[in-house]
Structure formats: C-alpha cells, structure tokens
Length: 240
Image 1 (spheres, rainbow, N blue to C red):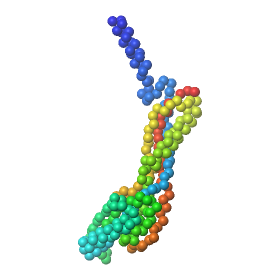
Image 2: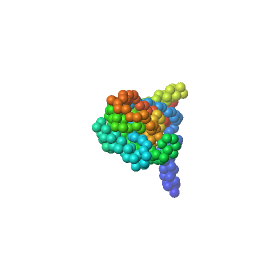
Image 3: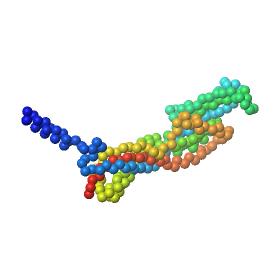
Image 4: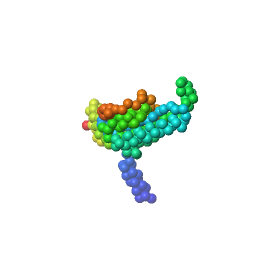
C-alpha cells in the first residue's frame, strides 16, 4: 500500500513538472507582451477591367433590344481584334423598359453592357478606344488591379512582423527586460484594399456617355496599388 502511494506521488510530481503554469503558453518567469505591427506593399497593376455597352431608345422593345445587341456584337468583335479573348468578356447588364416621361414617353429604352478584362494593361487604352469606336455609348472604368494580390502583398507580411518586433524590443528595453521568444503570431489581414471591379459595382458605376467618338487610344496611367498588412505578435519577455 505504501509502495503504491509513493508511486502515485511520484507520478503526480512528474505531471506537475510537465505542465506550464500559464495557460497563455508562458514559462515561469516570463512576461507576456502583445504588440501589433503594420507593413505596406506597393505593386504595379498588370490587368484592367472596364464596362462598355450601348443604351438606346426605339419605338418598340424589339427594335431597342436589337440595336443594343447588335452594338455589343460589334464591340466584342472590335475587342477581339485587340487581343481580348472570349473568356475575358462577360455580360454584366441587360435591361429594357418603357419610357414614362419626356419627349420619348411611350417608347422603349434598352441597354446591353459587358465587363471586359484586359490582361495586358498597356493595351487598355486601345481596347477602350476600340469599344467606343464600335458604338459603345456606355462606359465605366478602367479599374486597374493585380492579377495575383497574394503574391503582391507577401513582402508586407514580413515588414509587419519586423515592425512588431521593433516595438517589442523597445518596450522590453524600457522595462529592463529582453525578448526571449515568440509565443504566437496572429495575421490581421489586409487593411488597405487593392481596387477590384466586380460586375455589380460596374453596373452601379455606369454612366451614359456622349455619342461615341473614335479614339486612337487614350493613355492609361497604371501608377501603383498599395496594401497594408497588420500582424499581432505575442512575445515572452524575461529579465536581463
């Protein structure tokens, strides 16, 4: 009986030695410090999206719809000549309605628009010019973005951690301590949005333009897009 009790006491002592006294992952003598850091990454857009189409008024719904559809067919053909493939052209809006006011009251208004992705951003101006030259009188964009936003923001994650570590070192030094180790790293995600265009946003942003004017290709300045990444890091501090 005494032998069994002794073995039980030894087992309990060993279990206690293996347990950490702090549920947050700290060892004895450590102090938890939680700080946040931010990192910023800039990237040059490599693709563009814009919306183009036709809006018109005709005596009958059939005539109004036919004109809009014919115009979009011409627009798509013109875009194809600029190297835009079929998978990068998507219908974004179809509508037809009776006009209930003004000089066109009783006639019908129809529109047909497509959202276009240009994968060679330097050809965006030419693609827009081709669309307007083919008859587009509804146009919005372009919206310039990065095809792989995750890859574009990787450097910001490292900068966010470095900023957090610099803060931790400063706090530790002021308190007469030092950073012993990293307890946990929490990804705060992307705080600065890189502009993207979706079909619904494109429809909401559409505006009727003046009658189409054939262009040689308006210059499109790509500039840079930026993203801000936030990281929260738990550090364990110990005395010097």
